[in-house]
Amino acid sequence: MSVSIKEESQWANAGALSIIKEEPQWANPGALGLAGFGLNTILLQVFNLGLIQGTLPIIFGFVWGGLAQVITGVIAGKRGDTFGLTAFTSYGVFWLGLSLSFLLEWTGVVKLDASGVAWMMVMWAVFTFILTIAALKVDYLHVFILGTLVILFLLLAAHFFWNWSSKIAGAEGLLPGLSATYGAAAVVINAKFGREVLRVGKIK
Image 1 (spheres, rainbow, N blue to C red):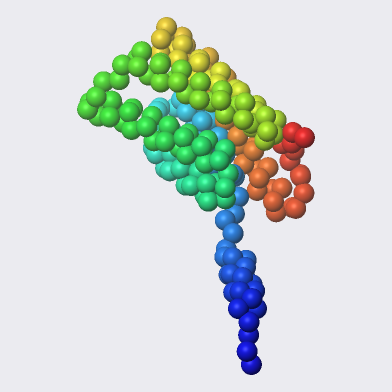
Image 2 (image 1 turned 180 degrees about the horizontal axis):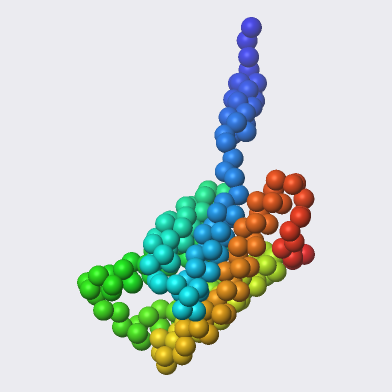
């Protein structure tokens, strides 16, 4: 039986399509990233409020706030999500860098410059403001998370610049932490129920 070149091409294309369809799809990593960001942010603010020592926020900053968010960002990139890749990877690296900085200071390897830390917080406020604008195409929950995070970075900058009480930042910082944790719950619960059980305020 003879097969024309055109027919062979069609069969080849059909085979390629079947291979693509059989490839496993990456699950939505948003819940992991938002949980890592949200709960670790809450833990840090509990420290800023003076309720716990700083050991646990730093330890979990390496693994949950840091590594988990970097993994989330990589998966988001595999899914073609530029916003998720940029946000989660960046905040993951932020947590890794912050945790390493304080660990090195506690062990006496380096001494952190307060004004340098303050300017770093300003730069992260600028970066987060850019993401807040992009979030206007995502949903109102992301806008709220990132908007309150901008304020948190500025309050932390004021703490390191002018010695404002860390409790001010600690109280405000609960807002992005709690809202991100809510977002993580929304991703998981809505996906399992197949409908919007927890609202995130989709922007039309």
